[in-house]
Length: 346
Image 1 (spheres, rainbow, N blue to C red):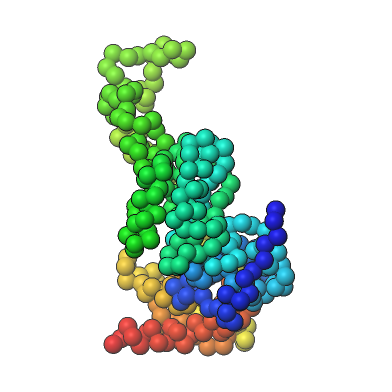
Image 2: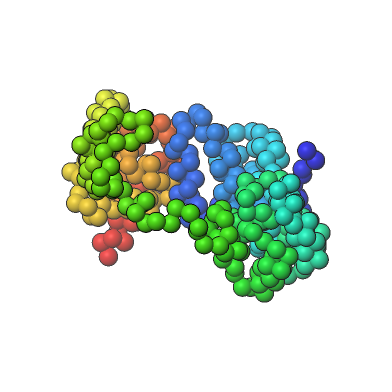
């Protein structure tokens, strides 16, 4: 692998995650214990790259290191090892051209010439700032070669003409829908289907008169002769019962692991589960993601007013329950909840 270094001059001096990214960061951090939160380094680097115009600057990498309380050099090692992280500025639309054998046999070299002629050298942003490109290893869409990935999406079954048209449209501010650029569904053969086209093959019923199958008992069980809908209903009911039991077991387990109350730690006041749709959107509190909402709901916390009323004992109890080590205060849950509660009243 070639040496990969950050573009220090282009990165500026500061970086800040977008406000809408904070919920995603909380989601990933909630997956790991507090003393293992550095395990979230790859997803946080990916989010930082998204918020930094498609590449990682040195300040962005330092922000990730500070969030995860890990040495800067460890974050640097991860970012420079994985080629999914780009270390210098890219265009608004960054083209990753697959040049591995299947795509090469289907015309990847022709697409490469178009990139060179219409965009310029690899890893350089064109004059408009809209386009850049690089050649990459297999992207896993071998059946649909030649293909490219532009930002997060695949553009498949490309020819020189269709790819050139895509590049021209992007350069002129016209977005292009991703997907196949020939007449076929995903990776199916081109054109209309010619086999397995009888609709009776897919309605789930057993044809009349069939009572035996090859290498099977001479008579089919009565349950196998039922309409598909009846079987589906039974399966759904069984899944519902299983899910309800799992939820009940989880509630018992959660109750058994609640921290003890002391003079310095007090469990927050709880309320009964509200009707569907009446609970506050606790994810509006920065630092609270979907996983934390479920945990708070399981404790009987559903409203901004409840969190707004917490004091030091309640914060200490929640910190211990969620293994947060001061995160509630650090992320200012209570002031945020107070502000949101006031907005709700008005």
